[in-house]
Length: 232
Image (cartoon, rainbow, N blue to C red):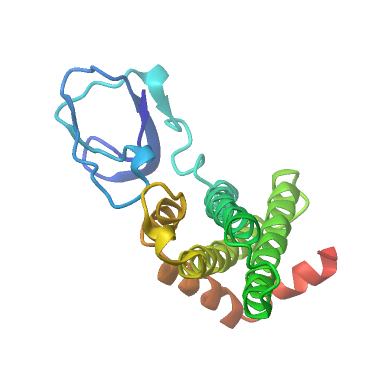
C-alpha cells in the first residue's frame, strides 16, 4: 500500500486541507513508474506515481474528519529528527569503517596527522549526536504535552541541518583519508558518501530548514527561552 499526501477539496473546488489517502497496489488507475535511478538512496524506491481517477474508500482515507490534523508540527518535527537519525547512522558506519581501516589495515594508528584528523571527525560526530539526542528528547516532551510543538519543530529543523553537515563532513573526509581504495565498490565508503549526499538534496532541503530556523530566532521571544526553562 502507498500512503500519499493529497489536498481534500469540496465539490466547488475549495481546499479543505491536507489528507492522506492509502492507495492499494494494483488499484485501477494507479501506475507506478520504475524510474528511480538516483546516485544514492536506491533502497528508498522513490518511483513516480501516476493516478487517474483512482477510487479511495473512506476507510482508507486518513484525516478525512480533520484535514491538516494528522501532519502536525510535532509529526513534521519527528520526521526531520528521524531523517537526521538516518544520516547519523550512515556517518557512524563510515567512521567505524575508517577507524578500523586505518588502525588494522593501513597500520597508521601511530601517525600524528591521522590521529589529529580522526580526532576532528570524532568531535564532529559527537557534537551531531548530542544535538540529535536533544531533539529526540524535546520531541518526546512535545508528544507528552510538556513542550511547545512549534518550537520543538524548529529545533528539529536545526538538528536536520547540523546532522547533514556533520554527516557530509564525516563521509567525505573518510573517503579522503582512506585514499584510493575508499572509492572502490568493494569498500562501503563510496556508498555511504553517495547516500548522504543524495539525502542532503532531497526535501526538505537545508536551505528550507535554515529559513525555518532564522524566522524563529528573529521573532521576539520564541525558542531559546523555552529550551533554557526546560533545562535541556
